[in-house]
Each structure stands twice: as C-alpha cells, then as structure tokens.
Length: 398
Image (cartoon, rainbow, N blue to C red):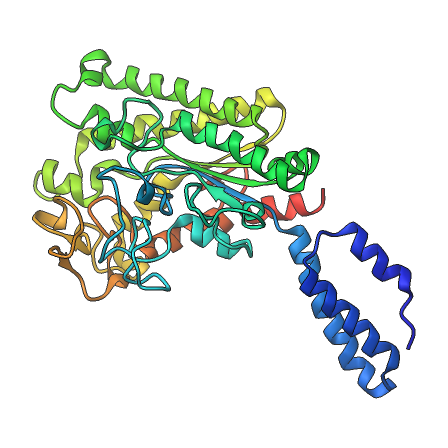
C-alpha cells in the first residue's frame, strides 16, 4: 500500500503537533507501506485514530477564566487573604481528594466546561506550573472575594480585583507571544473561549455586607444596580479591546436563597426578600446591557448565561434534581449550616450528591454539573443568544 509523502508533509506544516504524535504518524505510515493487505486495515485504523488526535489538538481552543470564588481554581492560595479554600474538607471529592483552592467539594464550573469542550482545565494564573505549553491551554485569573467594583471584598485584603485580572491577561498575552510569536498569540486569544463570573459579591460582600454600608448610603438599590451595570459594561469593552471574541457572561444566582443568607436574614425559612429583589433588578439589566453591547459591536461576542434561572430551578424544586435539600449546606455550622467557613470542625454531610449547596455560598459539584449542562445545551431561556454547543459548532466552521 502506498501513502503519498506530500500528505504527511502537509500535516506537519499545517498543524501544530507535538513530537510524540508525529512519531506515531511516521511509524504508522511506515507500517502501512510494508504491511499485507489484511493487516493494512488495522494499520490504517490506527492512523485514523492518530490523525483524529492531531486534528483535535489543532482545533483545541484556549480557555480563559475571570471572576470570583465561583470560578477561582486556586489563585488565592498564593495570596495573603482569608478568602481561601486550601484546606480539608474542600476538595474532598476532587480527583486527588485534596483541597486545591476551588470553593467546591470537587470540580468547579471551569473544570466541568473544560471537560465538555475536551480540554484540560486551565491552571491558576499565579501557579508556578503555568508555563510553556500549559499557557496554550489557557489560564484562570479568577480570585475569590472580588466584584465588579474595586471596593468590593475589601475585608479580604489581598485579592486579584478585576482591573488586576485584566492586567494579568495582558501579561499572559505577552508570555504566549514570547512562546509562539505575537501573531499566533493574537489568534489564540481571538479564538479562545472566555468565562466571566462576577457580580454577586458586589451585593453580599459590599452593599449588604453590614447595615448602612457606605454603598447603601451612597445609592438606593435601583441606582446601585445601574452603577454596577455601567461599570460592568466598561469591563466587557476592556475585554473586547484586549482581543476577547467569545465570552460567556454569567449573572448572579438567587442571592437571597443561599444558606448564608437563610442563616442571617431568613424569616420563617424563606429567602431574603431584599437580596432576591437585588438579583431580580440586576440580572435582567445585565442581559439587556449584553444585547446592547453586541449590537454596537455588530457581533455576538458576549453570551448571557442566565445562571439565576439555572440555580432557581434546583433551589425551588431540589427533589426534581436528585437533591434532598437546597437550603442546608453540606459543610458549615449554625442554622442551615450557613454560618462561618467550611472547616475541619464544621458539620459535614456524608453524601454530597444530596445537597445543592456545598458550603454557605457555593454550589456542590453536582449542582455545578447541572449549571454547566444548561450552559452547554440550554434553550434561550438559559443562554442568549445561543448555548455553548451551538457556539462550538459555529466556530468550528470558521
């Protein structure tokens, strides 16, 4: 059987592939050239699998993550801050069963999206392991405690606020440029998938952090929401100007229904009406702003993920999703396990699959899986103007 040598040369020149894959392609072609007709089928089948791996690697897109504790994969481990998830029982269901800095019993939303798109989960930007080829996978810039506003989370001291995350993004592009060249680095960023999750802390760790907070004295709630949306728009345009072309933008969950708020603000076991009002004002305005920005750009750069509705589904009807409760956190103490941090001394549920919330503020891995499934395949009730599966299909043709 003859394999034209030009085919292999074309593969080498047109794809960026590692040397081990090239070795196996070379070996497979050599075997095919010298095999009998009977065994050629198996050799060519192996070649098809190898070429499939090459194409997948060539098609893989970088994944970049910005935001707060819902998507932080461990940056705060490297910072002098109390906003950390670097000790047991965090990570109890992670593949290594070790705390990694993720505010989860296991995988978080970036991990699960990475699984869905066939990619490694991007490393925290501050991780010393993020170098060389790992940079091409992407990076996670998120930091627990931050918000849209610079004064959000001041009690956590040393965290990576949004303006700093965007500075790190510029630095990342320079590092990638040094690795593969400026033009390829620009293309990598333009073709990357970006996740941005921020906003909840601007309510729970700012406006409502203490009675008569500085922001609540400065703004009534509707005006505060307008201020947040205005500042968020600036962040989106900054991302766009830095090369972002596909950005998933998540809203807040039902803020008044998390165990922490049930423990401190609930009356008769119900969600906090004031925080629910905040979420009800904020999320529709965020979606409208995204539509407006896309219209001005002339392209669907920003995708609105209605994580409020995604959460509300299992919060309002936990049994339908296999949970026994959406009010009590798996790990914590006090009413609803909603007080303080999740620590070695906390109450810890034996079966995390039955709890919608892992700790007083953060969904369990199982709840994260439900959210990511809606991000991937959800209708326009959840994803506007399209879900991530549609995005991936469209982008694969361009």
